[in-house]
Length: 224
Image (cartoon, rainbow, N blue to C red; front, side, top):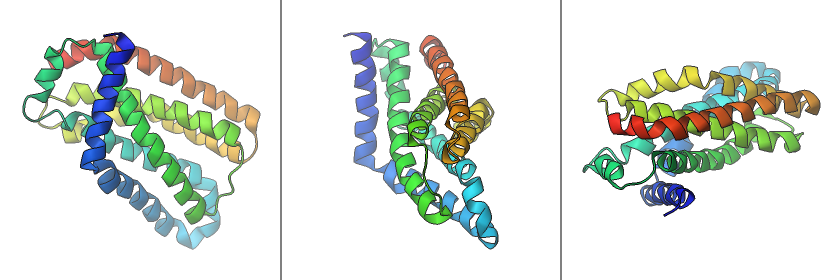
């Protein structure tokens, strides 16, 4: 089996489990929606502020939701020795990383589409610059999924993984939050040239975090 086939196999496995369990639709999506609603209620007295801060609030909601998605990605293998089976399957560690990160990224992209609709409705945002927003969202999602998967496997074998994952992931993905927010702000303001610079930073982070994951995931999985 080729490297790519192994990655697709792992991604399909995780997505199939999520489709059957419906955790993403029953927990992660409502959580992201609640975060947006809480921000809307908190800032409602200053309604004119909402469109300005919408990009940052959107990405905070995505980031917090990504913590649930990453934790879930490893929780599905916590019981019945499933993680040991994954180690013994003879699959390349890098392929396992790419598969699990891809599954998380697909879930987050679906979440982002729905949350973006919510932002437009709740925060009265006029969408401009989709030519930048779409690639920026994809690159940011790849970066979040890759970094989250690396740190997720670090905490996978620990009893305190539910509380440790946020402590590890949030500082690591702070550059994604900053760059994605700035890219969205500038794109919505139709300052596309500056928005592309931040999108390029998202691309660099996505590539670096993915390369680190491909190299490090196998040894980290063995130690978890």
